[in-house]
Every structure is written in C-alpha cells, then in structure tokens.
Length: 334
Image (cartoon, rainbow, N blue to C red; front, side):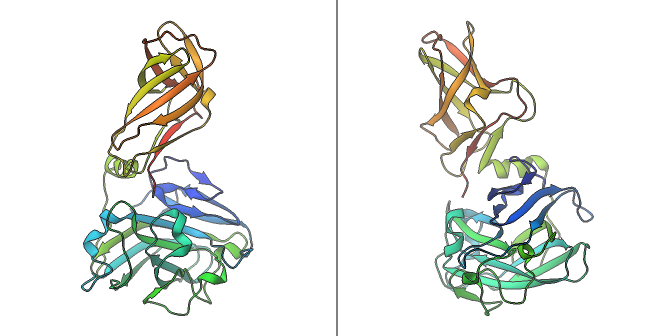
C-alpha cells in the first residue's frame, strides 16, 4: 500500500492505494495508514463513519483488486487443468469474528456486480486491533469465461456490507453468479467506527504461500503507471509537455508516458486554469485541455488559451502554474 498517486484519503468510490478499487455507498473513509505489521510501512484502512445498511438489495460495498488478464493467463482458468492459487494477506480489525472474502471473473470496475463466476470464503479475526496473517488456497476454476488479455482476468473482493443479492450459502467452491459474502459474517459498514486494515497482499499459483515478494519502490510504481500516471503535487511549475502553436489559441503537444500503458489513456485534470502556456513571447493561462490520438507510449494533448495572443508555429511549453494542488493524469484503468 505504498503507491498513492491519487492521494491518501478517500470517501467516495474509485481507485485508491496500489490501485485498490473502492465501492463506498455508505459513510466511510479509506486512508493510507502508517500502521502496519513488521516488514511493512503502510496499510489500507477502512473506517466506518456512520453505520448503515444497503438502501437496495443490489447495492454493494467493499474494495477490490482487479488483476489484468495477462498477469493470470498462466493459471488456465476456465479449462481442465486450471491451477490452484494461494492468496495471503495481513489483516487488522477492531472487531473480532468471521469476515467475508470473494474471488470472481469480472472484466472491469463496471461489471463488479455481474460476475459470471464467484468463489466466496471467509477468514477469522481472532484478536481485536492485532495484525494477523491469513492464507487461503483456492482450487482453480475449470468453468466459465476468464479473460487472458488486457481486461481484468481475476478479481479479489473484500466485502464490508453488501445487499442480499450477493449473499450465498455455498462456500469454498466456484459457482455461477455474482456473490460476495455469506450470512453470519461481520458487517463493517453496519457497525459504527468499525475498522478494517489490509496490507501485504499476495496472489500466487500453487497451494503454498511463499514469503512476501518485496519489490523496489520504482518497480512497483512503474507497474502502477501501466494503468495510471499523475503529474503534479510534488513541486510548483512542473513541466508537462512541449508543443507547437497551431492556431492563435491552440497548442498541440506530445507527451511521452513513463511506461507503455494497458490501453490508450484518457486524460483528467484538476482545473484548466491551473496550467499555463509559454511560447517565449507570452505566458498565458489555459482554458481547456483535451487528449487526441492517444497511444500506449505517447499521447497528444490539445491546449486552448484565451485570449489568443500566441504566435502561429512557435514552440511552446505546457506546464502546471504556481500550485501544489494542481495535477493532470492519464488513465488506462480496468
């Protein structure tokens, strides 16, 4: 839970630490915590601010990791000979009891509630406010459709309190349908001030958990940048791209991405007025930023300014103005 390109505190659904995707339908906060077991520096901490139950049987709450199909293609799911996998993690909670955990074959964040295959199991928190390591071995699924390319190929789901549409009495076995939990488990979202912390998560082929694989920070960051890259927040006047004035109010820029992204990215930013263009003669505030002709390793950006004092065919710099809160990002998330 060290990589935090999007921030360190979240109260709404979306991607968070280490690309863990949050579905927050109640009043909860997810933060990057410095409280962690020996050997780790951070954890993901879910805190329920106000107890609530799903307003609809089809609502779901929790957090998940969507694993790209290329990274699990060797498992052979969906055919005879599918490999078993072992899932290990560290957990800490302020309430003891049985907690739910699910695995499924959703292909994107937009299909979490419509999985075709699910495996629901449980783990036990034995001591409150104590870090405990859990290991779960899952038989390979010989049925269903499992993506092996750029869509999600395997998903881990920590449920914190979902609607009744997603409950099942079938545990520790693959089944058809979208299921996240079973009866009698701890409902984190429905418990005032409940906390659930996770770190040291590892999924690997085989029936034995190996020691956690520590990767260099730069390696971990690059792996995350395949899906999301953010510029901003580290210093003022961060440079983004060089471009060419192709109109009195437009600059076309080319940005090289740090790694090849999963798919051609989309662009997001804090506010168009947080950026500036400098063509050596003038320095003006931008009014719009748009992406064009995106590709995996490079992408084009069209920057608009107003008024329009730029000189046609002059080289220009596109950069963040004097702000630590401004940012631009490129996303190719699942």
